Length: 218
Image 1 (tube, one colour):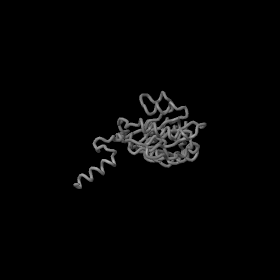
Image 2 (tube, rainbow, N blue to C red; image 1 turned 90 degrees about the horizontal axis):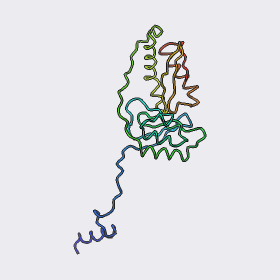
Image 3 (tube, helix red, strand yellow; image 1 turned 30 degrees about the vertical axis):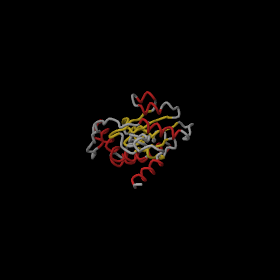
Image 4 (spheres, one colour; image 1 turned 135 degrees about the vertical axis):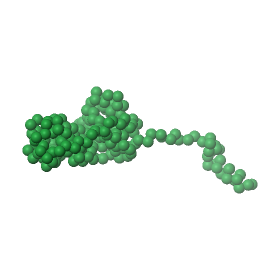
């Protein structure tokens, strides 16, 4: 018997009498976007689901209810679970905040599976222009320029730090010497956001703009 015939018979036994071309094949999952790990945040009610690729090039998406989600399939699917309180999407992660009364088991697995199934790359938005305001005399600036200066500080000194913990901050306005901000994602309703984080933000704004400014979370 030729060697080729021996090999053919051995192959036939291993494959149950089917040739390799006839054997059923496991479908290849063509979805490239996947959750690769979760990351705890300072907020015990918020988990950051880290993806293997960037899904949002600029800005962020923050949903606090089903109505906020618009046509976002992932957001709408997540809010079908009553345990979900907030969804925050930025760069390569999705931060989900749960209700205080809910536990992470089995919610964590359910959220992971939904993200794997529905997450998509969001259309690119126009990149926000980075302000470059001369703040050598902050108090003499018109109101709009003061807001631009505060945004400049938030962008260069604060937002990247908050993003590492799955959160963000929005400038709501300024009244007199009071700077009003609103937290997003894991930072929202986080105990440290009302104390240490707020003090850190205020310190940086004071140092870079005006030592008489105060920062309030609204």
